[in-house]
Image 1 (cartoon, rainbow, N blue to C red):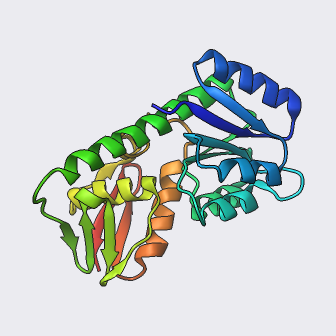
Image 2 (tube, one colour):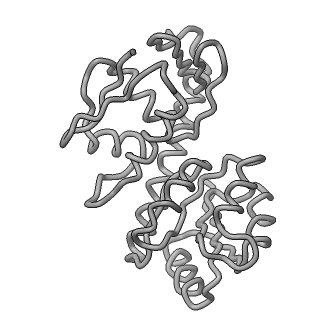
Length: 232
């Protein structure tokens, strides 16, 4: 497994502390201290994951993410100010994989990184396995079609552009269409980690899916439980 991480954080004390912790956990960490250098390093496509702070000198983290997503699908974990929902929503809309609000327990950062990389590895293994399968029935509901062996989705005949996490959420909901899927189960299966208190990552991915699905399908919120995918 590629264990190269890119940490884009302008506070050098925090960067040094996190870099040391991640190195102790077996990761090869490169550091950038502003948006422009962080973007250039991320675009080399040799990192397994980018840890991206929102507040950066020069171009901010959201601008870096937006530019990066034009050429790269590398997983991105955003570091955001606590309670700043706008930044989180924008980040997920631009293709972030997860977020962690500051201040945070450094061990939580390590756990999130492990979860993202584990999910990416499982996705790659599943894709490789499915590619070897001669036939695999696509999943369909209304005008939506998912082709598991290629991890592709189409809506009304047009390709539906999804992040890895969004695809996983949609796959789980479509695989169990008509059944309520709990947030805890979806978080574990789609994000590779346990659901925690005040964790809204899954909600953000569902919100993005609703926008992309438009009026074709409805992801219904079952209050206190989870989500249900149904046709309109």
